[in-house]
Image 1 (cartoon, rainbow, N blue to C red):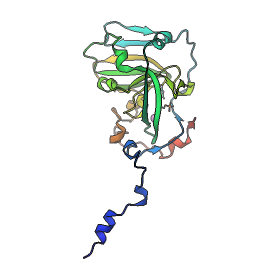
Image 2: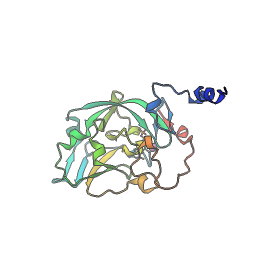
Image 3: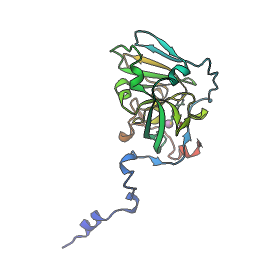
Image 4: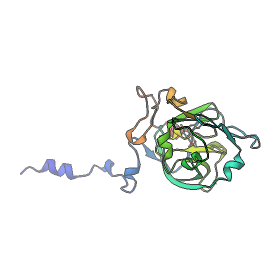
Length: 223
Ligand SMILES: Nc1nc2c(c(=O)[nH]1)N[C@H]1C(S)=C(S)[C@@H](COP(=O)(O)O)O[C@H]1N2
Ligand SMILES: [Mo]
């Protein structure tokens, strides 16, 4: 009997030896980092918090603005989740605290035809997410990371956390939430990135792969 093929099939390639506990949590093409990379377009904004407002507009019965104090007075939820950036880093077990997006919706008169949301943020950043994705339990308007207020570079005073999509969908320095009937692409979505961005299906790009070096993220700032 020639059982070499069978033996080979049963032997494990050394590089396939991924930590079993995290295997299912790391999407294809991603590398796990313990550090926290800092990625954004433009400068880190500096705010006068007395002037800071979150604006709610689009497909709503009444447009609203919230001060930071008003938002901070709302009931909070804590979420521990994995995050995945399209530049190939993933960070496991990140803990955030803030307002669950689904709970926040209860305070707004959103029209039933609002099927998409555009998050508007500094500096000139925007990103679109379907409404149904924002109803997941772990989608937050986050004030805190790891038990402390967000640092300036990670989005202080308020950012989105949408863990199940590539992290560009999680806008830092949130300024406005626009409810929309029809979908519309945001900043990266207009610039060659995937409209939906599921990391487990490797939905990185909308057309041809963009030439992002595999070690791109290692050259960025971290904390
Ligand atoms: N306002 C704003 N939010 C943003 C971005 C940005 O350029 N501007 N970049 C996105 C991208 S590509 C990523 S990976 C995450 C990075 O968040 P972090 O710097 O806290 O790791 O923020 C997202 N949110
Ligand atoms: Mo990213």
